[in-house]
Image: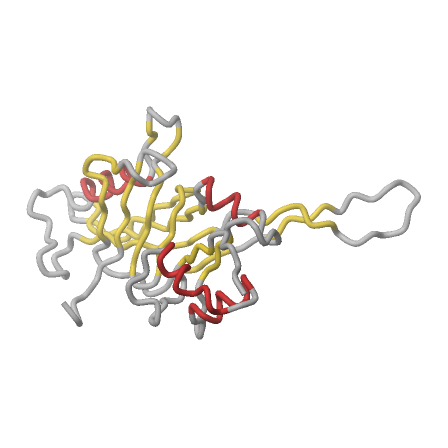
Length: 228
């Protein structure tokens, strides 16, 4: 429904293709974040032969992007419907959050894969680090409020990773992220040198409304046999 408040949501998966949802593996934020931040890093080598002058850094790779988020947990009663009815404060809330984003997945021998979504934000990754700051307590010392600061490292499915690493080949799949002002015909022109293939691109991405692309949306441009 239009105008309905959408909560930030984290869904945990067992596999890196994001097809097997972990049981009870969905977390919805109590309050939506005031901000979120992406961090990008490009790695270079600065190796220099002995006795030689300085050389230009050489590109090595683009490291996976990081997403930084804060989550509020509160059982003080100030938020309607979220009081401390059981007398255990936020202990159970924190433990459930940790089970979803932090606990070890025995089948994959690593933490769960996570899909984080809110508005135009759609991020796939795994937890890199997390800290919990307890801020308010009951007279008995039970924590009633905490802020969790978490950093997530992005992951890309193998098929998309190969596509991104071969962006210069005209015969391979390309992947692009929609930016403000992008249109499908314009993006198609940049990839193929001709905008007339945009309907084929729309079909390949199952786009029913290709005239309203969302910033942050991922578009796949498959190999297309060009016609005159």
